[in-house]
Length: 138
Image 1 (cartoon, rainbow, N blue to C red):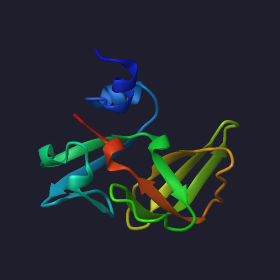
Image 2 (tube, rainbow, N blue to C red; image 1 turned 120 degrees about the vertical axis):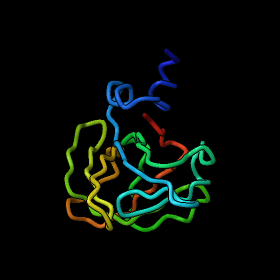
Image 3 (cartoon, helix red, strand yellow; image 1 turned 120 degrees about the horizontal axis):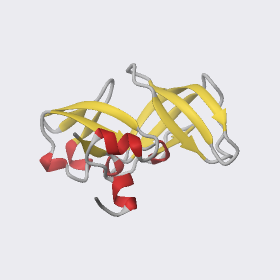
Image 4 (tube, one colour; image 1 turned 60 degrees about the horizontal axis):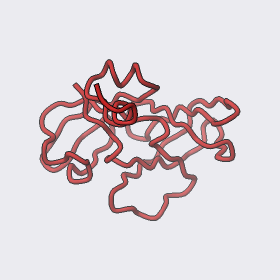
């Protein structure tokens, strides 16, 4: 039990993360100072609970917490930038729903974008992810 916003943003279990809205589940492993995912790694210090992360983990990352860009945006101290490719898209009126595959992995990420953020299928993009918006779940 918790506030609805807290349950959505920081779910503690896979069931709660999937039950309350759509999410991406990302498997990871802590390797030294990095959290390694399928095809990319993010420095552990960039996560909200970075010092507490250890071993094999699963993260919940909401589709609206990922931003797409045509060019690499200016480097942000906390964000992770990954090259990727749009695999699918659907226009849902109030937003676009994209499926994007990071360049160096088999992972498929769902991304929600505003109606004017139009990307074509097979277009190369940059994914901007804020690790502070990724919840470690059990």
